[in-house]
Image (cartoon, rainbow, N blue to C red; front, side, top):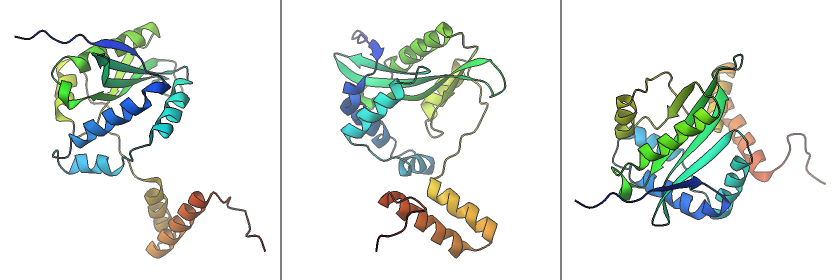
Length: 205
C-alpha cells in the first residue's frame, strides 16, 4: 500500500489566484453529473480571470475576520477552505467560525485533504474563542454532507440563492402585479449597471 502524500497547509495569497481559479473550475466540472441541484449551482458560477481573482483575494485577505487556507501536495494547490469569524446573531457576542468553500481537487479526494483543512479551520476557531463551528457546503455535495454528519455536524439552516436581477424583477412584479413592468425595470437597472451610468445622470446634448 502506497504511503499517504504529505499535505502542507498555508494561508493563501494574491499569487495563488491562477491556481485557485483552476481548483474551483476543476471541482465544479466534477459535479456535472450530480443532478439538477448541481446544475443550479453551476448556473450561478462565472469563472473569473486571474486579475479579478487576485483582486478578490486581496480584498478578502484585507479583512481581519477572514482567512483562506490552502492545501498543497508536492507544491500544487489541491484544496482550499475559507474561514470567517462572526457572531451567532447580530445581538449576541457568541463567536462562531463559519467554514465555507471546502474545495478538494477530484484527483486528490479520499486522501484526508478535507479533514486536514477542517482541522486547521477548527484550530483557527479555537484561537479566536469561537464556541460554534458552522460549515456551509453545496446541497448536492453528498459525500461532504455524509462526512460532516458523521463527525457531528447538524443541519441548522437552509441557504437559498437567486440572481439579484431576477429577485428585483420578481419582487417588483409582486408589488405592481405586472410581470411585464417588473421585467422592464430589471432590464433598465441591468443596462444602467453595465454602462456605469448613475440613476440621476442625464444624457449630454
